Image (cartoon, rainbow, N blue to C red):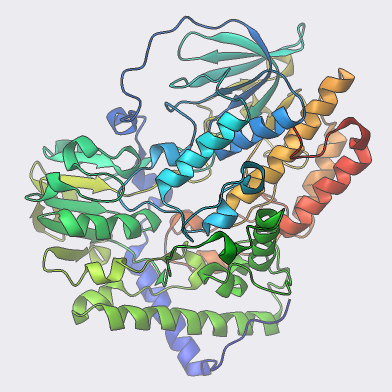
Length: 602
């Protein structure tokens, strides 16, 4: 890959001054508790996690039957696993989902203004197979949720699905060669194979603000939006807030989308910000099938592969998506282990210069769009581009020009000081509120399996987390582990990742379905040897990028464990998603070729 480009590199003094500014701004925000500053909604604040969308959940008799495959999780990972299994001819696939329908994060997140920040024509999977063409460059959440349901319907996944049901334990029965799947609805059914697709952004979190339980106003998390209180819907019209003093905590990707909607309808809106996001141009617009080449077979697969290559640092003859992600692709090197240039002096200097230019442009945009100088200054992000997830919006910055919107910068106080019955206290000043919305996101990388909330017990009664306790996770390709037969995990652990995670999930689903179909055809057990695990760990560790120093200097956020730095262990395949997908295809051709159908052919 060529070096990142910059028209006017900073002088050595400018670069030194900017590093010092970044350091000082980081120190204003870092907290000694690190990730411990947040609380789970499932502990003492369980009502934050309740499902506001399912209505009255009907009673049903517990199930004690047998299925070929149980899929834990009904988001895109689980849906794609089910769809690809059905394409391979697997008969009984049961998806178990805690929500009231398919959709995963798009089931839970229905807050006003919600859109995907990846172009819809590459984010929505199986567009070629379903014949669906999105109407907007960036799809609204409801369109994405409907598409998830469309794939599930097309693949026959509703027939055996269990909704409003949480899996509570997975236990391997050696004598029967099956997994026993227990749920919170009394089910104890059996499955020959299990796929866990429990996601990496599934557990809502709250800030550990002293007195949070004392607030007597109305409050909820953005992933459980209360339209009964606010009125309206995802497109706005929040008439219930017309005379309300509303606060929102959190100015990340969710906050950037929801603030303009609240600003339009609230009597007064207080935005409590610790760290501003980098907010670049969105450029939202309607599109036609002709705009994206949807008249050609395979158009979507071609488009998403083009996007993946560019954001992974690969060469492409043409940029088909041409948006903020592809324009800033050279700055994603510190997030995605695929460029393999980190540490080279020429690269590091060119990278820092390009970063300098991009962040200066983003800060200049704030100054140009926000009329109040003090507010504009507080909204400017002082950190490097890859320190926090970039955001894109055409409406966020102008919202702060409204008379009914107040930005409350909490950086000098290291966040909100405390809460009272009446509202929020920052640096000694109380802001009285009728309603407080938490746009504070999720515990990143935490799932039921990795947290232990969903215990997995394998051969010999050994719990998965116990097997991993001494040397860390052990897998082959991130999917399978010795001692846990016929269990496949989907996610980013020792796998590959990308900013377009649905593409990665689909490649994982194809591979998982291929493994299971081949095992069922041969009446074989899927289980790697310890030697195979050792070999894969060596592949992941051998070229693991050293990004710890970069992230240790970043402003606190979920990329660096709230300022504690980013671990350098072999947590991902080091050569990126493009190379990993090629590796999986080659592996299937070598080991499974004649046993399988081609993906996409029912």
